[in-house]
Amino acid sequence: MELNRRRFLQVGALGVAAAIVQTCREQRDRGLDQPSLIATLGTDRVRELGAHYRAQTPNESTVETLRAAIDSNRGSRLLRKSIDDAVHDDFANARTVLVDGWVLSITEARQAALFSLSHPA
Amino acid sequence: MHTDARTLPNGSVLEADICIVGAGAAGITIARELNHTPLKVIVLEGGGFEFDQKMQDLYRGEIVGQPYFPLQAAALHYFGGTTNHWAGWCSTYEPIDFEQRDWVPHSGWPIKRADLDPFYTRAAPILDIVPDKWSAGDWKNGDSQRVPLLNDSKLLWTKMWQFSPPTRMGPKYRSEIVSSPNVHLYTNANVVEVVGNEGVNAVQSVRVRSFDGKEYSARAKRFVLCCHSIQNARLLLASNRQAKAGLGNDNDLVGRYFMEHFEMPCGELALTRPASTATKLYEFTKLGGTPRGEIATTPLAQQQHRILHGTASIEAGNYGDPVLSTFQFLDTLTLKQQREWEASGRRGPPPSSKGAASAPSTSGPARFYHLTTRQEQAPNPDSRVTLSAEKDALGVPRAKLDWRVTDLDKHSMRTFYQILGAEMGRTDTGRVQLKDWLLSDDKTWPSFISGGWHHMGTLRMGTDPKESVTDPNCKVHGINNLYIGGAAVYPTAGAVNPTLTLVALALRLADHLKTLT
Image (cartoon, rainbow over all chains, first blue to last red; front, side):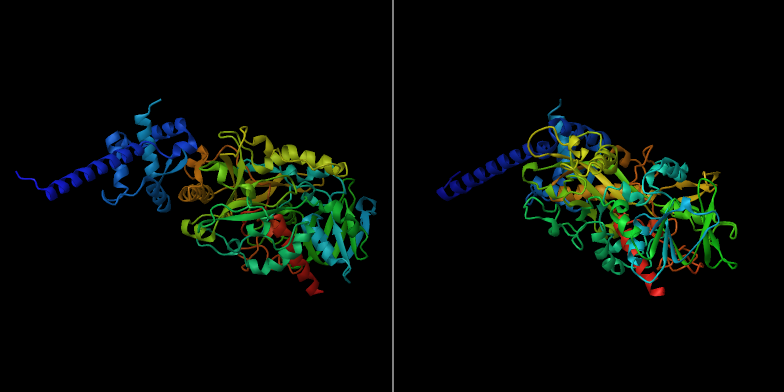
């Protein structure tokens, strides 16, 4: 198969773009189980809150279901909101949940649950 | 003028244009307003000028229903009344507090907030606070840290408190009353019965009795009962020789709708950015100290969520520390120190609050804050004062208090904290945790519900005699010359302490009485 210069650049650019997207997604996904809440409440309390959330929401108690739930709350794949925006929007639109008495955004509650799975005590 | 009523001969008859029964915040305010007028005024105060345990015991009563503070500890029975131990917290009722709210049964005053505005202005100097300064901006004091939280919120705002020194109205206004040319104060003059005329449509006299068995009476054109919400109701109910159910009680309303303010630790606040979040506006410094703010629900939040009016104080503390209500820590330690400080002629700095004991133990800006609610309770006809079978030393049946709460009370508190949590989260100011007791259903309460020691209702104001005891001028329906001073006439409790509004209403009543003569 003949590969001219133009074709070579196109394929190369697509490859780089795919790699960037993949890297960003991995970074973003790594952030899913690192809730900002940790800075406010500390790792132990967030881990406890995560365990509470999983106990009170049995259908969101695995890594896969939690990642899917968080992502579904962040819009379509291409226009996905940042976690911070998702948390803000949750609070602004009454998507809150009581976990051990704390009023949390549904996104950060799921993040806490993910954290409790990926960082057990 | 002043006379110790114990020196009067048995069977004496006192005569006046206006007879005021009780010399607490309402009675003293009305008496001062009538000072230097052509009216002949007598003030009958049950106690003397100092605390007397025997006199105080007349306020002891029976508690049924919700557990409550001992009645003899909740109000003081001597000249100056409960201002002799109040903590001086002052704030105005909001316009919505006067409105009929379709989600709050039995709500609605027959007057509006605007009707009270000029009287709030006049009441402020009586209590040694600054008139008409009730916004957060009024108390920034040039300090960039004294700014309200949640400034863009439509659901929450910062309601300001001012702190009276606190004004002890007994010592402060005693000489003015005693030296008055037309107001005659009688101390140790306990009214035991209000006596109606033949048709029981006007008061003819009040009967006064002393511990040694002597009796006197006072006749006047008009009478104003300013005894205190529970004692006013008790006195009318006990005046039952002519009207079996008690005076002014044709519709079985006297004593009903007793209300308190809930003052309960309800949650914790964890700030997201403690170093850059200004909370100074919310600090409680000391009795009589700098005005402070509390987070309150807006009328929109109350309407949208169909909840009662409440506020939350913010006190820095360690997460999980036990929290006493504001009044509790003031009462147990600071009030004692305050009294000692006052007794010593106010030498040295005034005592600071025990709140400092709950300050965070770590250095640097606090991350955790305790949230304590102040909330009205829904008017409830089953929450009431009746007469006990037991009588006091003067032969008057004691009060029996059946304090009751409603589902709306707890529902409102929980909803308020959920709103607060959502707004703190939306602005990323912090996160809020509700206390365990608040999470359970609307009917389940802690074993003891903490109140503000505020007694309201019992002789509620309204236009319809079938739904109220007093009219918009605080006159008892059906009794042409009997008026009520004090918080007994409040149809709803508002979110804040009652004293400033009580003094404003007393001024309004005094003005009304002056127009009649």
